[in-house]
Image (cartoon, rainbow, N blue to C red; front, top):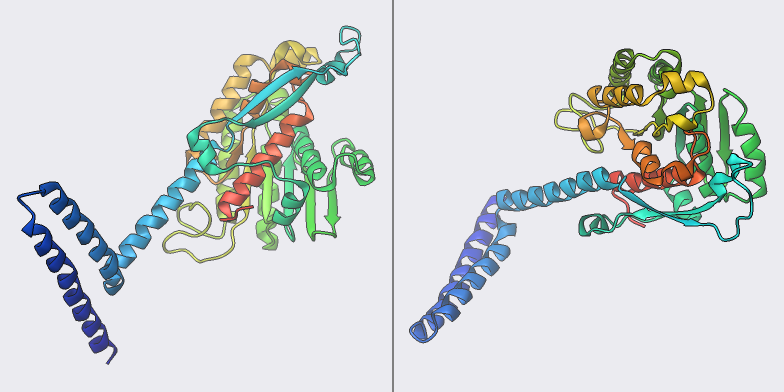
Length: 376
């Protein structure tokens, strides 16, 4: 009965199409010799209109249109993820600064006012990146378990994320800073007002990150958002880029095994033949540009030279751990952020001004919006 009704609907649609096409085209043909452009323009318009009206009667055509739309949206998301790190800086001398940076170099970070924004271009503007407010960030991360794991760069990123959510000048943040920056230690906080748990895990080596991944897998308990990054300690104490690349490849395997879909990575969830299970959002916190002449020990200047830094940067790319290169982790590009901000944004050549990590936190939040199909 349903088939008969569908067949009847198709017949009715075809008859209607014929009437809609033939009658206007016959009338237009009457004037063909007088205005050919009018005839062919009208014919094209009417044909397209009929196709639109008939599409719902043919499931295969409808599915095809839906598939094409999905691919376009998917490609737009990938494009925006790839451009989310495109940040420009505006550095201006701080008119209210009265210190003497020649006598106290630690004051150099206060010498410039640092403002950043996404690069102005039609493609980037189409992505609608924006700096999230305290309210927006809290709403996005409401009820989430967030883990940030790594070395001092990860700790600075954690500070910036908490500054955004709680307010950098709040009394609560003043006490949090002291606990968060206890040397070589973990830190956890529960923000009851938004139901968010944040864990900072001290993991200065890539092998520490791999062990953390395996621990989550064993417990079958996964964070909603995870930001990880390591490399500076390995560069200083191991100084072997090949070993670093191998460690990253092992980490990549552990991350892929943690993700609840296989065999191939999708943009935000399972691909064909996999089980639909919520996937954690995972990010790689890149290493900063090292300014060798500003590093504060002779050992650092000798081992963490430009050639070694570039070797470690190549190892990261060759490991294929980054989403941009087919891997599982979205890059938070600290390298580009620090390069563009320059030596005015660091006083020790390694640890940078809070504005760098503030920008990285906003980049992560915008990537989360893209991956979770949300808009503010």
